[in-house]
Structures are given as structure tokens and as C-alpha cells.
Image (cartoon, rainbow, N blue to C red; front, side):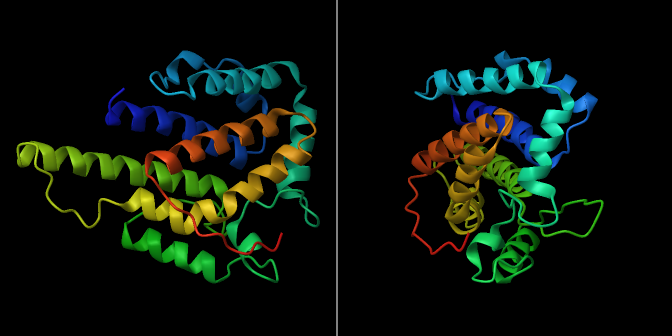
Length: 226
């Protein structure tokens, strides 16, 4: 699998996961996941192919078998209820001592988005450091990086020119997502009653670990407060 195919496959899976962690389940959502064509999510040539397909089938099976009310209850307990969410989906909650929303780390991510022209069309005012929004931003960064790399190869006959902007995905992962995402995903796995969101969290962690390895990232440990 070449890099373009890998980016396309990752984009499909991260788009699916972003939808799962952001959208309060309804009948259309349940139907979409239940009818998922897992053959579209190709990771051939990587050691993660088998566990990826296994988790995708788990997600699909849960959506098909579980009643909508159970998915709704799980989603609300994990991400929505006013007090005591079981897995807060915003980075600043983990990175700030007071577990605040819209904190300095949120502002830093907003500056990152502004620098690289990543614009979210949100129906309401909310922190942009939501896990799902960060996955969408990561997809965009990966696609832009891959497109620039191809342009460099084509224009310079295989000799890559220096593109200071061609490390968006690495910066996104290292500075804004990976420092806290593992804790968030572990809380989802621990507290998901339906198993649906637990499987989605396991798939997310598997994919992010694969990117960390692919990009040869070294993530400095930070203190987490949640």
C-alpha cells in the first residue's frame, strides 16, 4: 500500500470514528453503521489489518444488535450529561488542573487551526479541542501533507524540496492530540456499557498508535488531571 492509499484508508476510518464520538445516535446513524461495508477500510500490508477489521465488525455488530435507547444512554453518560461525564471528549479537561474548557491548550489548538486554515462549521459555540474535531483536523493535515509530498516529487523528479508546512500531521499528533487522547480513550473503554463506544475507542487507539509509529514520534509525557 502506497502512502496515498494509506492516507485514504486512514481518512475513511477517522471520519467514521469522528462521527461516532460526535453524533448523538439516531435511527439514521444506527442504520448507517449497521450497513457499513467494512471492505472499504483497507489496511493491507500492515500488521493492524486483522485487529482493525475485527473492531470494525464489533462496531457494526453492536449497532445492528443494540436498541437505539441503549446507544443513546451510553453516549449521554459518556459525553453529554451536565455533570460527571464519564469520558470528557475535550483535551483541555485533561491538560488543565481545574479541568476547564476553553483553556490555554484549546487556544493553542485554535492557533494551529488558524495557521493552517482549518475551519470548522459548528452549529453551536463549543471548544474545538473535541476529540472528533481533532480527528477531522488530523485527516485534513494528512491529506495536505501527502499532496505536498507528491507535488514535490513530481516537480523535482524525485528529489523532495523542503516544505516547512509539510509536517502538519506530525505537529497535530505530537502537540495537540496524543498527549491526552490515550487517557480519554481508556475512559471510554472502561465506562462504555454498550460496548459500541468501547470498540470505537479501541480502534481509535490502534490507529493513533500506528500513526505514532509511522511518523516515528516521541511523545513527551505530560501530567493529566482527569
